[in-house]
Image (cartoon, rainbow, N blue to C red; front, side):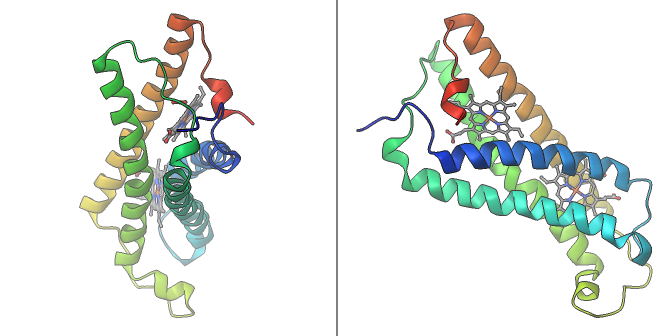
Length: 173
Ligand code: HEM
Ligand code: HEM
């Protein structure tokens, strides 16, 4: 198996683009609470939704590229223990799952109001309201994603402190 020193450029690009997009989407998401979901505020919701769906699409492309380039990814890091290995692999899997799940629930939430037909030229639905349960799941999945990102970044920093080796280079162009 031929290991590379770095992740493929495309994966590095998507990794950092996703990071920037999430900062913007998260910020817009928090501001949405002050704006009712109606025709006048639709552009604000639209921007959040479009950027959110691009994270979903980028993640699917990322998983595809990763699978295709599996043979030439950087070697696994030096795990401190089996527990560490399990934690790193689980966090990576969960990150991918929630990068898909969070926007998917957001999409279903908007779809369920009938507002998508408005984008296709139809009228804005009267009394459009988000399903409370779906809104709760969207919020839960976003905060789970945040927690995973914090664990992920902490892990990268601890690795540097413990081994004096930076794995950040592998994810930098
Ligand atoms: C939105 C925030 C972030 C998300 C969703 C995210 C997600 C991920 C995922 C899923 C991987 C696994 C790549 C693979 O499949 O092998 C990864 C790798 C990596 N990430 Fe992040 N990341 C984020 C932010 C950051 C930040 C801020 C840093 C810098 C401290 C960072 C540093 C790294 C490094 C160094 C790797 C490579 C680890 C290795 O070689 O095993 N990430 N990231
Ligand atoms: C990874 C991508 C996404 C992130 C990080 C994100 C983040 C957020 C945050 C932080 C909020 C405010 C807290 C809350 O009530 O949940 C929010 C609300 C919302 N998001 Fe997202 N979102 C994402 C994707 C999407 C997508 C793709 C859609 C629709 C297509 C969407 C639709 C909404 C809506 C309609 C609200 C308002 C909920 C309400 O008022 O109860 N989100 N989002």
